[in-house]
Length: 135
Image 1 (cartoon, rainbow, N blue to C red):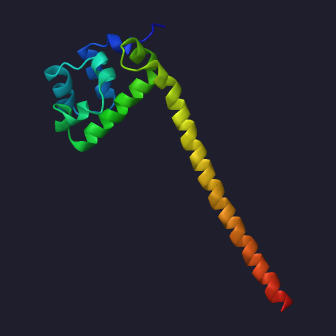
Image 2 (image 1 turned 90 degrees about the horizontal axis):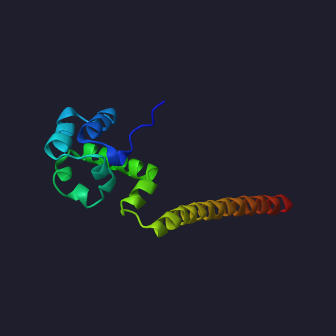
Image 3 (image 1 turned 30 degrees about the vertical axis):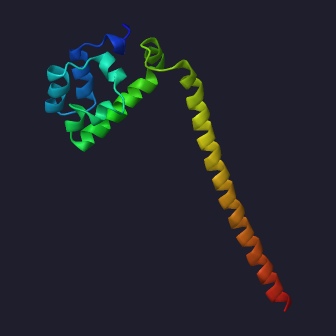
């Protein structure tokens, strides 16, 4: 089985096919690929600022958001290519998982705090019931 072409080697036509598979309208594909000549490297290099400028800021909001998510997915799946292209600093590869882990820890701590509060309410409720029974 032949290996799929690397995204950095995608032509404008390859990008057009990918956008079609992602469900974008022909008009949008034509604007991005035929008019603006977006290829695989361009997809990998797209960033937040690019989505605030032409031609991307002219896309309908739904399509702009979907394209942003699709590009972020491609970038996440191809971090080594981003490093090779100089679009990602190596230290970020270490920091990103740490940030994710910290967010998870915060969620766990908040959940445990909420659980503790619920347990305290239950204990207080039982104590009140016991006091009432003694009276």
